[in-house]
Length: 337
Image (spheres, rainbow, N blue to C red):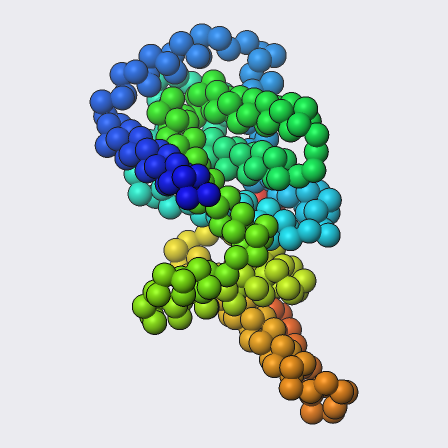
């Protein structure tokens, strides 16, 4: 176990070093990127362009959201609903932040097959494909499927990841270095995220108990217990999962609709409000159930009031979300973009 963890951290550090080196060498990689883009553009044919556009859509937000909903239905009796939802939301936020950090323009030496907004480095579709389908590979090997099914499933999902990356170069919206950097960033994310899922959703490890064994400082322990509370709420409360899922959906929509920095701040405050209210509700229910074994009017009032607080915060968040996203979504549908 210790050797496995060391190998993961060593691999993560190697991928981070590769990403940083590539990010610092963007200008130096430009000639190679241009040659590769011109070479791949020479392969274009009408039918292949249609195929590449379809493959590229496999990593688009609408397709990943739809796929997530289908997969959540199949794993509804397990704890994998939250990791599936989180995998989608985190990959979107991670790519959004990295793009804003580097601000690299899109390729200009070849005419693009499709028009894309935003920046080029790293490739968002490549990151999304590697992060999301890579996590599905992890879930596949954690499942009870036969070894043959796991191997063929891994090969298929890996092929999808590679083809999505190639499609972005073919379509003329990303450089080779954009795609490779996206794969490297997602590799780091997957190593960290799957370790988290393995510990908290498969082995039910407590971060507080682990740190207590190492006699961690009191301040660190307080953060660990808080993290255990959030994770415990996600694993125990169905409504918490619903709120978490809606938050992820709003994040994806906000990313697609390109909301302003101020609107992002408002949405994030609302996310915190609703999730905090649900966690407080969970704490009150647990305390009441522990203190009162039989039915009591005051116990019912405490639980109902806590649930009401969650409802009020959720309704307010929904109204504000519609005010922010509604006009943009209506314009998007109306214009057919």
